[in-house]
Amino acid sequence: MTTTAPPADSAEVGTRMSRREVLQALSGLMVGMFVSILASTVVANALPRIIADLNGSQTVYTWIVTSELLAMTATVPLWGKMADLYSKKLLIQLSLGLFVVGSLIAGFTPNVEVLLLSRVVQGIGAGGMTALATIVMAAMIPPRELGRYAGIFGAVFGVGTIAGPLIGGLLVDTSWLGWRWCFLIGVPFSILSIALLQRTLHLPVVRRKARIDWLGAVLITSGVSTLLIWSSLAGNKFDWASGWTVLMVVGGLILLALAVFVESRAVEPIVPLDIFRNRTVSLATIASVLVGVAMFGGTVFLSQYFQISLGKSPTVAGLMSLPMIFGLLVSSTVAGQLITKFGRWKAYLVAGAAVMTLGMVLLGTIDARTSVVVLSIYMAVLGIGVGMLMQNLVLAAQNDVPANELGAATSTLTFFRSMGGAIGVSALGAVLANRVTSLTTERLGPAATAGGGSAEVPDLSTLPEPVLRIIQDVYGTATADLFLVGAPIALLALVVVLFIKEKPLHTLSGDERRVQEEAAAKAAIH
Image 1 (spheres, one colour):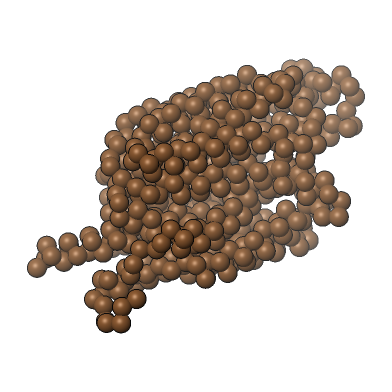
Image 2 (cartoon, rainbow, N blue to C red; image 1 turned 90 degrees about the vertical axis):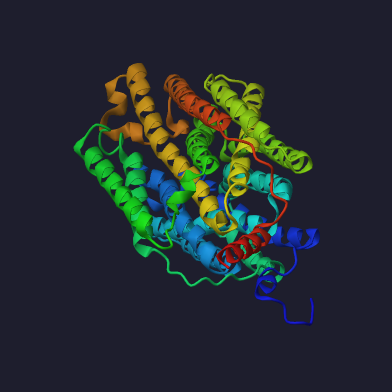
C-alpha cells in the first residue's frame, strides 16, 4: 500500500485481489454456500424418521422442506439490496450466524412446532448466503474471469442440492448419530466459514446514504409467501378450484401489485424495476424461474422414488444420486473454464437448456422396473444440462448491468430461481400426491385411500407382497409423470435462452467498474 493519502475513489477500491487472495476468500464462501444449500436437502431422506420421532403429520412432512425454502426465497431480495448499501462481508457473516442459530434450534428441537420455527430461521440465513456469495464474487472478479470461479460455485450449489439426501441417509442409518445431526452437521462448517471470511475477504465498504424500503420489503415478502403457501396447500388441504384458492391467489397478487407500486416510487427500491428494462436480465429471470420449477420440482422427489419404488435404504438412495452430482460437477466446471478461456457464454446456456430438457424427458420414462444403470445415465444427462445452464444465467445478467446494481440483479435472479424451486416442490408435490391417490384407488379400490391414508408415505415392510408391488408401481409411475410435467417447462427455458443476446464479458471487477462508472458520472455533471 502507498504511504500517501490516496484519493477517495482509489481508497475505496484499493488494488485488485490476487488469484491467491481470491481463492482464499472463495474457500470461505464455498463452505458457507455448501452448508446453506445442504440445509434445504439434507432432511429429504431423514423426514420419515423425523416425523415418526416427533409424532408429526403428513402436512408437517411437507412444511419442514417448504418453510425453509419459503423463508430463503422471500428474503433474498432484501439481502441483495442491503449488499448494495452496506458491508458485504458483515452481511454474509450475519447470514451464516443466523444459519448457525437455526441449525442449533433444529438439532435440539423437542417438537415439530419448534422445528418449523428453526427452519424459518435457517431459511433466512440461507437466503442471505445464497444471494451474497454470488454478489461478493462479482465484486472481486471481472466477468471475463468469473466463468472459471462461477463454474466451481455452480458445482458447489449442485452438489449441495443433490448430495444432501446422501448425507442425510448416512446420518439416519448411523445409530449413534441419528436425524438430529442432519441439522447439527452444518454448525461447525458455518463457524469455519465465518472465521475464514474474517481473515480472507477484503472488500471496500461502500457507505451510501440511503434507507431500506422496508414497506416494499414487507409487501414483496408477504405477497410471495402467500402464493407459496397457496401452492403448497392447494390440491392437498383444499381443491385447486376453491374459495381458498381465489382468496390466496388474489390476495397474493394484490400484495405484489402494491409492492410494484411502492417500488416504482421508492428512492432505493428493494428490486429496482428499471433493471427489467434490460433484456438480458428479464430473459435470465424468466429462465431462472423455469429452471427452478423443473429442476427442484422433479429431483426433490427422486429420493422417495428410490426408497419406495426401488426399495432402497436411505443410504443407498443417497448414493444413487451421485451420477447427477458428477454430471453437474463436470459440466459446470468445464463450461466455466471454457467461458474464461474463450469469452463466449451463450452456447453453454443453449446447450445446457437443451440437455436439461432431454434429461427430463428421459426421466419421464422411468418406472419401478427401471435398471440402476439406465437411471444413472438419465440422471447424469440432467445433471450435465443443469450444470451448464444455472450459474451461467447469473453470469450473463451480471455482465449486462451497472456495477451499482450488481447486488439487486444477482439477488433478483436468485430470488426467482428459488421461488421457482419452492413453487415446483409445492405444486409438483401436490401433483404427486393426487396422482398416487388416483392410481392407488384405481389399482386397489377406494378403500385403500379412505381416511386420508394416501397422504401417508407407506411403510413397505408392513405391506403384503401383492400390495407392495402395486404401491411400488404407483410411485414409479407418479414420479415419472412429474418429469413429464417438468419437460415442457424446461423446453420453455430453452426457448427463452435462445433470445438472450450474447455480449462481450467485462475485464474489470465489480468494484473497479463501480468506481469507473462513478467517475464518469461526476465528469458528466461537471
